[in-house]
Length: 368
Image (cartoon, rainbow, N blue to C red; front, side):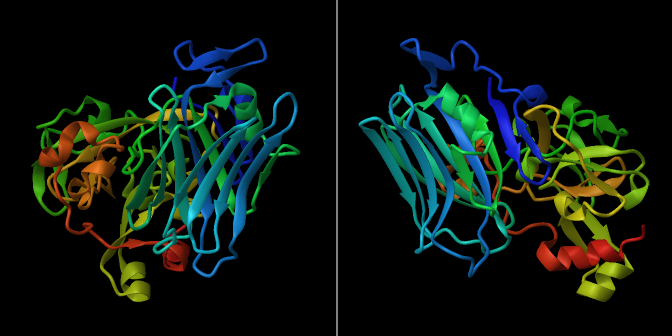
């Protein structure tokens, strides 16, 4: 079933489809007596601010329920900037700790705790979407998540306490890939030498028009279901802003190319990439409410990192950096089917990506 529920502090949304918890499909939940069902496999994703110099230690998430048999789940950001996750269910315990967690390029990090009970394997990862860095460790014997605890995690209150720096939670009934993610909604027109085509109709080998390299063959197409919160929250870019010929929907992490006098005068660059989420607050970008926990998105992979034309505005393609040099991490991403041999190496992004106050400066000088 995949992503079945989200909590988003920024959008004021919690729950599953229609605001209700959606019960996992038959293969995802295993009965535990008559009291509850268990999520034998799953993913808990948490997005949080981790500004350099911010207060630590911090208990980012604390869930506890002593009814029946005691259960506790805690996510800590420790004083040494490590991240740890501790599970307790009656006498059973599980623990994982990932060191060296710092926000180097942006204010928000994505932490994912994934478990596969039957395989007796779990992973804890932290991603910095701005600098596209992934840190990951494995841990043994993870505990399954009771269904009633999953409900409570999605609705902070007496049992679930969230630190104010936590902006979003998402829960899935399967171990979800980490790392580079799809960002573009279906039906978005992509420019090709033969004319615009909906992104979902493209296939590997098809030629797509790029800004710097002319027509280029698509190496691979990423199709992915993403949770509609945080970095993957839906943003509508409104025509005619940014040169758009029609409205399109992307995720907050999608880079949009901006150029002109504002970029040159204020930042000394001819053109820069700005994440769509950084553009909200301008008339050309609207954060959309989530009516479902997740949605299908697409992205295109080329031999180089490129800018492609989406409804006549330039946006960046999938950036994979040197992920091919880290087979253990690559195996946990949505790009795993390519393998290290077929995955290209992107030495540098096609343009500088702005974040923080620089992105806000440029947003505020864009024509309204």
